[in-house]
Image (cartoon, rainbow, N blue to C red; front, top):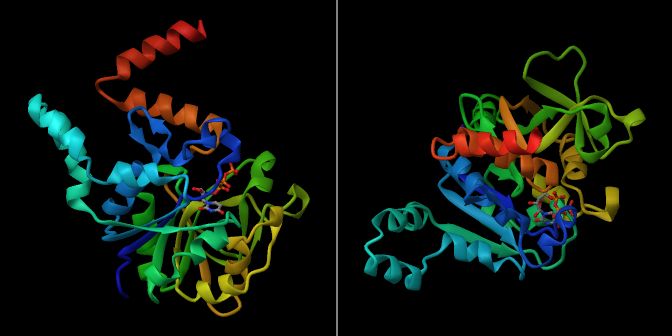
Length: 290
Ligand code: UTP
């Protein structure tokens, strides 16, 4: 089985849950301490063996390009001031990786955003990492866990997490085949944002996927679904008529940065894990939670 080397990162949505910040700034640029969310995601892909990256943006999100690109003026300034540490920080990613970009001109939904990656993917299986979901994998990065499951099965694999009943209607939900056990299971059905009474399980698709290129055939003809959007989950359901699709329970922690609570939790947790900020964050928490 050929290894997964391409990653698609959709980051073209309007981010309405994070207004007013997202009026002029992409939520994918929200900093978790001092690193933009999307950089954590690109690094996860790098650490999972990805060598080709595509970020899907829109006309208001050019600062994502700037973040990963060169900055001559800043470089000159840092050189003149002999700030070698800072120079290292801004050089690291542009030297290591080359990112490509494609524009989604109309925000018609995640399925439509993924369709914009068709030319980049060129008939290969690829990793899909949503631009506002950050993972801290337990022993391995989330995308690597999925890529290994793909190598075992040769099929699309959806990364899942268990969500409480109150949250099932916010996610794509998986129905595993009867008598399936373990973390990697074959799926019978997927449904986008079901009502709790109709949800087949609590296994939610959590922003990480490996998809085979057959998905594009279905995305091209996909009609609007939940919320009037072109839903990726609906195309995955149709793909299941042709190929097996699996889900894998991702080992690790996930932060939904597109939600205010997820953003706050990530900020606290990442700061607590940093040597230079651990004590300061503890002090802040003590002070405000007395
Ligand atoms: P979300 O559903 O979380 O993003 O999509 P949203 O629509 O931007 O946000 P809310 O729900 O209104 O707050 C998950 C990922 O897919 C991208 C988003 O940028 C996000 O990273 N996306 C979504 C697109 O690229 N295009 C779309 O049309 C929709």
